[in-house]
Length: 282
Image (cartoon, rainbow, N blue to C red; front, side):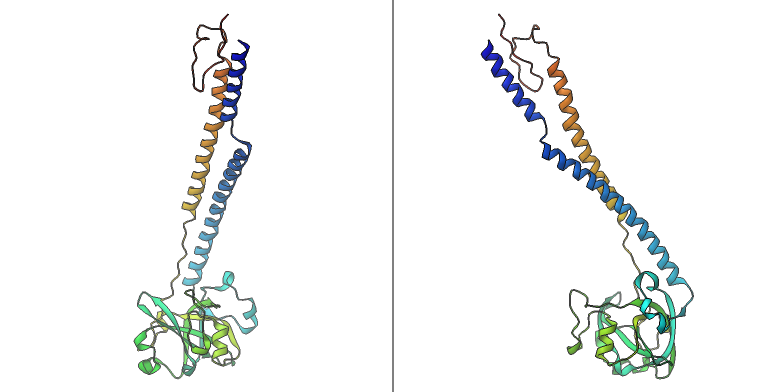
């Protein structure tokens, strides 16, 4: 009888240990739960930030045009405080120093035409006059759209785009440009006192036969709510799994503990999670 008690007691301990989650797995699951909740909260905060950004940019884009920042303010121009401001600037185009930057727009593939605008104070501002298709990349194909005298340009202030674009680096020595890198373009064209930003000309600044202006895309993806709901859903799924693992194990152990040792079914050799202690009758 004692031999049978010893064997069944060891089997019971094995079953209890098998049902009890490992400590490392428990810690890992709880850590993952906390991390998922944190990610969800972070996405909610990002969504609030993105909505504020969209509202701020919308106000800038549709505000009346204001003069571009003065040279004294150029060092403080930044994405957060200035990008997409509706601005105006007056000067004379230096068409012989224009730069073509590869572009893909709603008009198809082609080039942005960036031309320095020399102002009366001796400073210059790069103007993205707009888009031209590949067959019109040669300036001789659009002479009628290149004014010689003083012009006023209105458009959106944009921050320089260093280090290339489309996963390709600019190659100034071969006149291949993939981004509107103001400093690199100014150096390649021998320009001095150039503003550290450029201006995307709007459609109203377009000259007949010249580049197509007003193609600036102002769009900010805002999928943060979807991401937040995804993280929260994963967290609650994990929480449900933890409840089943821990709560279910507790319920099973309660049934096991209260199984009568000497009841009528004591000799029945039942198996499973609710099997009681097997005792040999004397």
